[in-house]
Amino acid sequence: MVIFNYYLQNFCDETGEFMRIYLSVTGVIVFIFLLAAFPLALDIASGNLSFHFDTAWKLVKDYFGGIISGDSFYYLEGKDRNQSFLKDVPGFFLTSFLYLITAAIISVCIGVLIAVWHSKSKQEWIKDIIGFLGMIPDFILVLILQLGVVFIYEATGERIARIATRGVGEHAILLPLITLSIVPAIYLIRTLGERTYDVLSEDYILTAKAKGLQKLYIFIQHVIRNVLPYLKADLHKVIAIMMSNIFIVEYLFNINGLSAFLFNVSYQFDLTVNILISLIVLYLLLYWGVRLFIACLERIFSHD
Image (cartoon, rainbow, N blue to C red):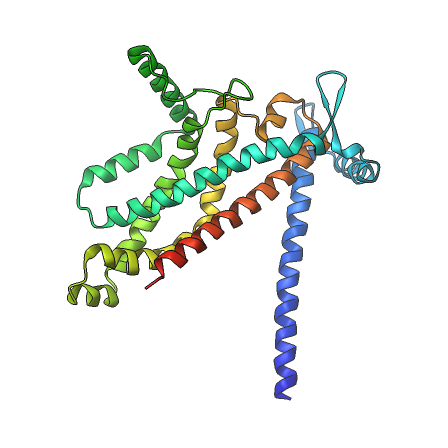
C-alpha cells in the first residue's frame, strides 16, 4: 500500500505538471491568435465598438490551412512582392538575439557588481544617480546618446560610436547595447542591493568577519554566491524589460531585427502570428541563455 501511494503521488505530480504546461502553452497560443486578429476583427460602426469572432475564426482557420500549403509563411512586401518568412527571419532573429543576449550579460555583470558594492556604500549621491537614470524614458536616452556622440564628433573630430546602422558593414553596436543594458542593470542594482544588505546581516557573514577574513574574500565567496539565487528569481522581469525595449532600440538605431517586420511591412495576420511566435522563441532562448551564464557564475563563485 505504501508503494502504491508513492507511485500514485508521483503520477499525480507528473500529471499536474503536464497539465500546467499544457494549459500555459494553449493559453499563449490562443492569446497570440486573438492579439493578431484583434485589429482586423475590430469594427467601429455608429459609435459602437464590436469584435467579430467570425472574422477572427476565419483568419485562424485560414492560417492553419496555409501551414500545409506553405502560404502562411509568405508575406507581402510593398505592393506585389511575396517574400518567404522562413527564409528572411533567421537573419533578423539572430540580430535581435545577439543584441539582447550581449546586453543581458552586461546587465547581469553590472547589476551584481554594483549592487554588492553599493550595499556597503553610504554615499547617498549614488542612489540619486541610479534613481535619475531609472526615470529616463528609453527614447529620450537614445536621443541623448546620439546627440552626445554628435557633439563629441563636432568638438574633437573623433567618432566614438555609430548613431545608427547604415548598411551591412556599418552596424550601430555600442549605443544600442548601452540603451538595452541601462534599465535592466538599474533594476538589478535596486533589487539585488536590498538582497545583499540582507545577506550581509546573516550569521555566517558575521562569523566570517569575526574570523578576520578579508572583505573581498567574504564578498566573493559568501555574498555574491548567495545573491545569485535572487537574480534567477527576478530573471523573467529582467528579460521582459529588455524585450519591451528592443522595439524602440531597433527602430531608432535602424537595426534590422525582428521589429523590422512590424515597422517596414503593412499589417498582415499571418505575418503578425509568425512574428509573435518568433518573439516567444526569442524570449525562451534569451532566458535559458542567461540562466546558463548565471549557472557558470555560480560554479565560479561557489569554488572554495
